[in-house]
Image (tube, rainbow, N blue to C red):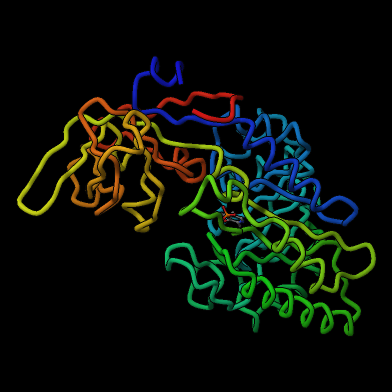
Length: 382
Ligand SMILES: *Cc1c(COP(=O)(O)O)cnc(C)c1O
């Protein structure tokens, strides 16, 4: 609490013991299986967080050259890196080829040709997986559903075979496998079970044609319990991994890759802010924070829910309904509407929980605000 009291708000507070427990649980779940977990850097690229994840032997999922550099600096091994994204530039591809990334997740036929040409020029064979769009609706928010036929991601099922054959014929390409990623904040196992069925069907089809893959990558997307961070500090890794263990029929020697972002880092972070004013309008009371949508954009962007706690007020005092808002000049700069909080005063410290994923990494300087700082603690509670 001391360090929290002494640091200028707003800032991200990371509980490194939660991160460590999360990583241990993942390692426990995959032990003895031919599974490789990659961390999707876009969820949080704070160097200290990256270091801790890399130290645990987890791989990295990248979506830009900048992330590739950050991953290398943090100590991730290039051969355990996957490079995803629909718009990889020539410069990014060349950089990744030069560093020896383990797999390019290829999202289109034109991209495949460019990677081939660049690899041939460099005298290399680019390891790739083809990103299949399995047309599965993960029933999450429309901005974080990625696996339906209308999304920009991946290659449609009906066009896959053509691209596989093309990849096998190109001299600069080493086709390693198939890649899937169906969306984010998925808490029901049904979409993952459907994904397993789709993959089983594809592996049967290609197996009959004598085409075998070294690896299958099922992407990420496992969600967390935003409503009850203390009750469920960790995502349901057991149900998640069990779905693949029980339902997916891997071929002998085949590796299964995962790319988890949110599930690894969401729970360890909170955005800490101070109440600047409490204001009353005709029908509403507003708690106005010194943190805004530039620090944490998820509520404004996706209508996302985060638990909000008043760290200063006693829980047993009277409660009121407040709209908790930021200072940014946008009506969407709202963290919560009609949220029940203990009677809140100017100067109180507020924690916005489960903000470790897509929080700091999406922060901006909009309104010429400074980027939030980050502080770390190994103690469990603030
Ligand atoms: C964003 C992304 C992930 C991680 O998603 P989470 O929902 O944070 O687990 C994994 N793979 C790809 C290709 C992604 O774009």
